[in-house]
Image 1 (cartoon, rainbow, N blue to C red):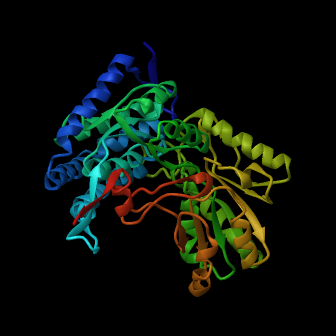
Image 2 (cartoon, helix red, strand yellow; image 1 turned 120 degrees about the horizontal axis):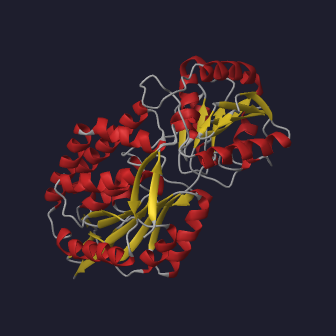
Length: 452
């Protein structure tokens, strides 16, 4: 039987080994999900909400333990791991408060005696999730999806297998039926067979464009719905009137949070010439204050990337950009999984730092002559997760809303997910929405009822 190994990226030590599930075990997991669904879908929403509240409380009680697990498996600074667990608790609270309203029948005025939309669960939903936010990515899917009456099977990233199993245990401890949320330990070769199984009714994936295309193709061949949250190449636009004193911390955090390993991170800083020098000065000074070190230390701001191969990939993208004319401003030292916070200037289209998603602590700085060019350059991308704009001219910023074709547009704030707002992308950043009411209705049958 194949084994899955988890490695601490900070010290390179083996954490644990897990046996992958056999074909028989995977079949049993699928069958259990289906049997459980037949009963779970009949539960009153109030009962599902009660369990969601249990889950929220459990996350808070265990946040120190769970945060340590995140940090050990993927290297995130412990204070960020704690914040991630707290955010998972908050998304449970949000859906506990709003589930009844979101799932209530919607009356429609027609010629009928009665007509309305009923929101019925689909069945078992497969979630394929990444390692960068190993709890949050799962909970923002699971909280609304299970509360809507579905069951779920999680295929997590192999390097966060401990997190995957801990999440399954949390649902059981909170009182959910055992087949409601299950983790399957397998490799990507088995995913196609799982998707093809009739028990799986839909698939959600957070991951790369490449993975998204593959999963969407398999699901499409089997006529199954997908929600895809893929890569991003977010622009952070700085106009000449931007309040750097107030927002420079936000700008740095937008790139360096989680060692830059975020699909919605600011990856291209597009700066109007009039403020370029001052921005670069303040941005550089602030990045130099970031404390690197042991991720278990609460004083650490940036520690390690999740795996050495991920750091190597970033270095290759940077080096290719340097060959094409980009310039190292600060940083660019790589040691195993650790990558020094880095600023690269003279970045233009045609370089990996401009065209591709850079999943690490590297800020690409792009100079433009004016506001119009900043919007044009920001839009020169095949990605579409989010755009940030920093300016004091809010009226002018509002005028650009229709020119930003991304899933989100944040003004004087970093792009981030919020349970109250729909989250997702356009173009090769994927389709469908998570969170808010849209996230709860992502995997339901919006059934029309007509009584004459």
